[in-house]
Structure formats: structure tokens, C-alpha cells
Image (cartoon, rainbow, N blue to C red; front, side, top):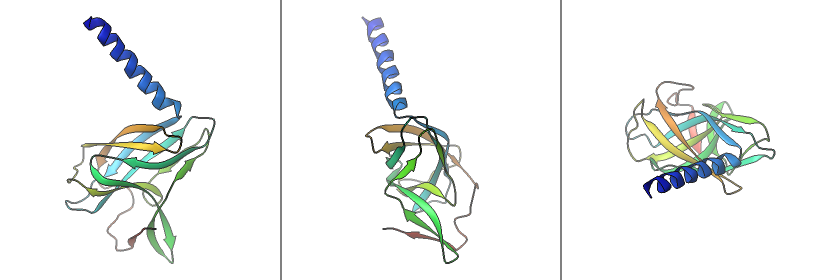
Length: 157
């Protein structure tokens, strides 16, 4: 009986993986920028591949590590960089989009605790077609554009 339960469990795990892969979304090099304790938000970055035949539309994300996860894009406005909330982000069919400092990124709003380099943060990406893809993001230090240069502002719609 235990052997049958184990086989069914493995089959269910295989079906779950196939369902997640059916959306065509693959997350590459996911990471979160380490920030000082009490930081109001943390940036999360990745390369999101769409191996599907249709565009893939990212509409949200969630993580137990933060009160909310928002989709953002940094835009230049009068010589100032500001982060603008994005209701959705489209990844073209058979294409990819890099979420990187100074461009598209996820914002972990109100982190529940300070995250240290080397830790992992689970974030689930949510798509317009109802599919979702979980990914484990590594916390890293000092990568990309500095956030404390006095020129970064948040702008929410």
C-alpha cells in the first residue's frame, strides 16, 4: 500500500510540474537585492522566458516574505528615475524579458523581516491565463543600480 501511495505521489508531482510548464514560463537567474533592516521594499529580478506559442502576460506575484509583491518598471522622467507600477507585463511568444535594476522588476513591499545574502525567497508568478509558476529567488548583495543615490522615487498609480 505504501508503495502505491509513493507512486501516486510521484505521479502527482510530475503532473504539477507539467502543468506549471504548460504555461511556457521558465524563470532564469532569480535574485532579490539585499537591503538594510526595515527597508520598505526590496527589488527582485530574473529573466522570464516564454517557450509558448502565444504571448504570456504576467499580472502579479505573491510571496510569504512580503505584504505584497508588485510589478514595476523604472522610467526616466526629467532626468530622474522613478518606479512606475505596471498592471501587467507581456513576454512575447518564444521570447524572453529580463527583469533587471533600472528596468522591469518585482517589488516586495513591506518585507516581513530583513533578508540576508544567501537566503532564498519563494515568489509565485501569476499569469493572465490563470497559471502560476513558483520560483526560489536568492538574496544577493551589491548588484546593479544603487537604490540610495537620492534620485530614485516611487510613483504609484
